[in-house]
Length: 191
Image (tube, rainbow, N blue to C red; front, top):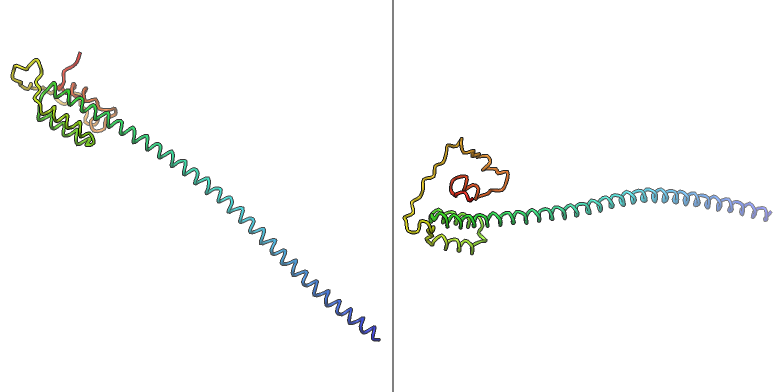
């Protein structure tokens, strides 16, 4: 009877252990399933973040390239503007010297030289040279022995001149001072 009692107790212990192990196994399977789901969600989120990182990286690269293009374009525009200003300055100075030599009107030439000097203050040495030329009394050879008498310049009425104020305010092409002076009768036609 002792053997039978023990056998029942052993079976009972085995049943209890079996139930405990099965419960522990189910808990582990549930934990594994939960971890797999969390892993799947994290992997999906990781892929989204990776795609977003690639988008941000490509946007930064495009922005850097566009910034470089804009900087290069601005540099070209600055250089072109500086060249245009230098050419205009040189043209103004050349015309000023030509006008001074041809029509020695000291006060007007000084005023023009001052205007040119204000327009391009970095060209001060040239301005000083122009001031020296303006201070010298230059008389054209053909009238050296005669008194210089300013000629009256007849300016036709506005409607006959073809003068367009809008063109002066917003020119469509570069200003040609020599042509302008000829058109206004301030210079004689070469020819």
